[in-house]
Image (cartoon, helix red, strand yellow):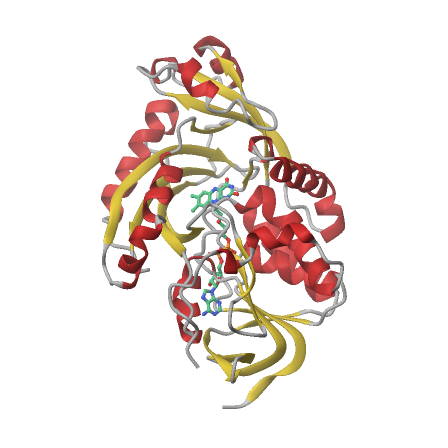
Length: 401
Ligand SMILES: Cc1cc2nc3c(=O)[nH]c(=O)nc-3n(C[C@H](O)[C@H](O)[C@H](O)COP(=O)(O)OP(=O)(O)OC[C@H]3O[C@@H](n4cnc5c(N)ncnc54)[C@H](O)[C@@H]3O)c2cc1C
């Protein structure tokens, strides 16, 4: 197979928000970067994301510090990348269903950097006049960061190419290996070599890492959304449930006791959940979500028509004006790790291969972590990066030669 890629410093595999941000940060500190993405228009998690930046929700000292670095970074990011990523600080309402105890739910947010404020129904409908007062018992209010995820991804990629980085559309099928050292990748368009390869393929990380014989607790949900076209209905705020079932689903599915099941095809590890989300974008589109499933085979097993009806029904209960608006169903894989922390660092037992993935909710913490990691790799040692090393998990399989 022909070597089409020059020998450089870094190959980044995956051009979603995570690989694109890291590619830019690596180029920014002076490395040569080749980013490989399998599709010019990927139906990836970034494409279907809400783009919310929950910087207010950090609970530990280091996560609070990262969140503050992150929001400061966002405030300048459009200017730095020279593309408007549509960053805004917006009203977020975390809806509380009738029959629930608002004070008890508010208390679960008490440790947050900026705990959201409990609003009664009337105040919540002042914030979002289209909200159906009969559909909630109360709401929590926070100021949430928001971006257009695909614009942000393109902005990172274009800024990286201005710094000399390159983007190629090619599917990585395997790795070039000499003993324990990874020297490049084999793709649908030929081989690419580099001193280091970093894997950022979101929900497909687990299967790609199998090519080097590594099994790590990185998994995926299949998410389903409905994208409404711009219309006369103007929703002001972002709406999500105060009790997110997705995190509980990830905790169950990511329990190490279930790890072996992830290598058996077509296993549904836990029942699907619906977290009703309503997220308006600046161009008038409204993203409705989100059903999450945990099936071990990356292809989706859902009935799209039924899923679309469920998502639309949930959203129209909160904002009746959304009923019947034209839109389209979509789905994608979203990566998550076994302990809710991302996996950042080298793969144990191998050289020249890194992982930068497993951010279930990357928008708040990933940009500052990509910046720190690139600086760390350039030689400014950052002790905080150790907590994200994949080696924190005992390898389920040792790398095979
Ligand atoms: C409905 C929904 C709402 C969300 N809301 C939020 C939110 O408000 N805030 C937040 O922080 N997060 C949110 N998320 C999560 C967030 O969007 C994702 O975690 C994030 O987009 C993942 O980015 P990624 O780059 O890791 O993966 P992806 O965006 O999936 O990108 C991975 C890329 O790798 C490519 N790839 C895969 N295999 C190969 C290969 N072999 N060779 C080459 N390329 C390959 C794929 O084509 C893809 O483009 C949401 C997700 C969904 C679905």
